[in-house]
Image (cartoon, rainbow, N blue to C red; front, side, top):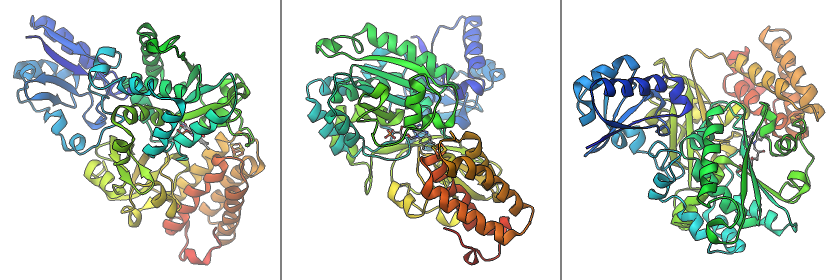
Length: 519
Ligand SMILES: Cc1cc2nc3c(=O)[nH]c(=O)nc-3n(C[C@H](O)[C@H](O)[C@H](O)COP(=O)(O)O)c2cc1C
Ligand code: SF4
């Protein structure tokens, strides 16, 4: 019987040497006259085990990792094709606690299937959601999404179904669906993983969104730094067209949906939805004033729904398993699951899809295994570069949108970047403000001027020049940016800056933070 071996084609795995391992496995098999089927799957998201080599056995898939290509001959010698022991042996993949303890809904097929095989996709429930949605009216589709409780995974957590309803209610012959795949947040990679590992789930989600608002065209706005995702998406789109999952007369329904991938040029602000639209129209990425909302007047002035890639990739399971199934995961108003992404100074970095409600501590220690250096984790930035730095005393906060806003923090796109006790939080605050100065689109004064002045003020604080007065000045500036900026870049950058001062005052030479005038 032909044995199947899986080695990931995900860019995270490739950066760790997966291509060389795949080449070595194929060459070694040939040398030994051993027939095998090599499948290049997505990643399971256990990056600390990449390059991961999996072998299909009667017990299920058995994993070996991390495998350097120099270990390939010894893998063959030890009989890995039968799932035998080896120093890199990790047991049955789905029994590895990091994987087993997840709740994979959106990522159910990522790392399991050949990303470009429609047959694989359908064999694991793919396109069931579309099949069901094709039997519903737009109103019924929207109702189902509202009932599922799905909220935008791009950061703002706006209810997806309500956004779709606004676009549906806006009269126009032409409407658009746009997928935000700019994924600019530091420490985030879930959009990339899904696009590389299960592109059809995103295509299916966008098609259902198009049916909901009667849109005939869609665009995936992809960050330029994702060449592998670009190739995979285009190949998947081609195959979807070939089997009538895209184009005219979708599956004989008489409905039309065309889909294209467009690449950004690499600016953080182009992830903000209105700047994204400007960029998609071929202009410089600058924020648009709101109203009108994009759902009323978006791409080329037409009603447009813009959703994050994970929001859209979460739609098919709502239609294959039902809104109630999805809603049963989570806590409070945060329903379903979120693919959390663990990185920075962490032992087991990777992707963990879990229902909302686990604590940050569980994510960092039960999954992440603590810091990579073995030193205590001192701070974690959750939610990208605009997210607050959380100290150990807040690690028991449940990962839930409301719980995080209650401590003036963001869950954002679910990225968590860990730092050990050697981190200097004054430098991190400076880094945050400098990031804003570099990435500001320049449209509003609090952000354009404020961020540059902010860096100068933080420099004076670090140099102990008139420290207390400068800290109060920084507090004033943050207050202005919080309340006076036109978009979330200037409006949220005070979060990391102020949280660094409040939770780690010693790093700023402050004895009693209560004596400062901070917003
Ligand atoms: C400065 C800034 C950058 C953003 N970057 C991204 C991004 O890279 N990806 C994303 O999906 N949303 C990003 N957003 C959020 C989008 O503006 C928008 O809320 C989102 O695409 C809506 O989709 P959702 O409702 O599915 O989350 C950003 C917002 C701001 C203010
Ligand atoms: S806050 Fe910054 S990025 Fe946003 S509109 Fe103002 S200048 Fe542009």
